[in-house]
Length: 559
Image 1 (tube, rainbow, N blue to C red):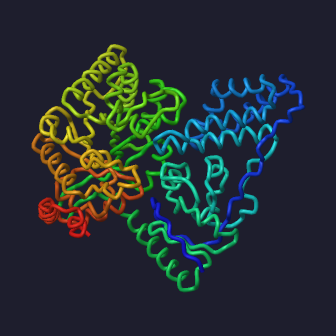
Image 2: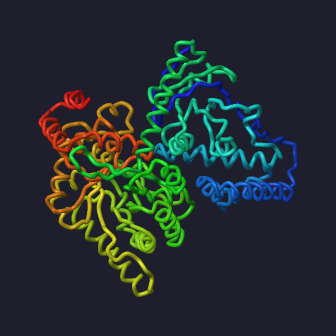
Image 3: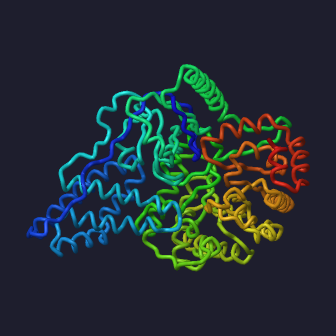
């Protein structure tokens, strides 16, 4: 028996079953014979056939998986096609030309600063593999012999891999590479599949057929577990299943504390695919629709019509309130088709509302799309990265202009659509009283707020231990924001990671938070926790925690 401990944990679930180790594709790197005279017309025709074949496949896949619509756009991108053709015209074969082009594209993404965009190099590799397989008339199938439910173990898994997998044969995933923004991580989280990533020891230690047991929440992995470990994991799995089934049965019931306060528990989503996966957990609505993923999964700025269709579909699918955050790009999020200037401090730079206010045509395109979709359901608009009353007033003025133009065109929309802001900067915290009098609602973004209040880069491995939302400075900032909102008669929610942290539920309830928004899979747990709490008792506990001056003391007190 061998035990491995994974450190990157982002899903939950307990799995016992045989391993299926994914073998690496052996297509081989194409080599150019210097003596060969290339017939350019033939090579161009072969490449064109490969483009058509892959495009046809991706069009079918895009109907079920959003990511393949973006892959299709890249395959048909004139820049990629022109570069491959240029290599062919330089006397190279279609295979060599494609390989050199794909390697160049991958490098562009691999050297990017933010993790999400670095992970997109895998998408480029996936596209390259598809085109190369089409050129060589080879199959992309990587799962020969997978005939029983298994733990899928791989170096990494690309979108085409998971699309080709029969879901009934997947017990869970373990990968050697990848981060929380990788395709397999996002897919596993959205579908509720137990997964552990970034475990290089696994690929070196596990063989196909080995019995594997792992707990995605604790990170424990056992290879050839003995009978006592198997019995322990089986019991844990049974208890977890019973708990989850009980929670799901009660998930659609109102969330009312022991002393009668009703609380809304919403989910955060970033795509229509995520939305579909979230609905079985019965969230009370969507507290954060990350509209930037419409932009990041495209090869161009989405048109008003494209955005309108997405927002309308989301509204009709949910049938409950949805808060759409306007484009929040920059910092750790980039666009493949738009170049940002190099900035020494991108998190403090030209991003989010600063960018959209400087690009009113782009901003109005999005605002018009949201307003049009508001005729089909209950929508709210939320502006990110607000630091001043002036910024909100400018955003509101543009919204009013869009309303006027739609009215003139005879297009229906919700004339009273609520306008709110993300409170995620120290400036917004200190200006909370003034801002609360101008906006319709607040939503606290604890991820960025914690980073800015503590001056800690959450992506910096050396200091990420200092990133802690239970720091007294952060808790006091949250308390001030909630108090300011309630004095002005508006409600306040939270859509950062802290909202889904069960350790924080009681203190946030005690501080007066009206709405919690988090990953959909966590909503049943948070709902159940709130049902067992008394708001007045939680308020006393929050008061004691706010008086503490040490983060360790606070965490121990709340444990």
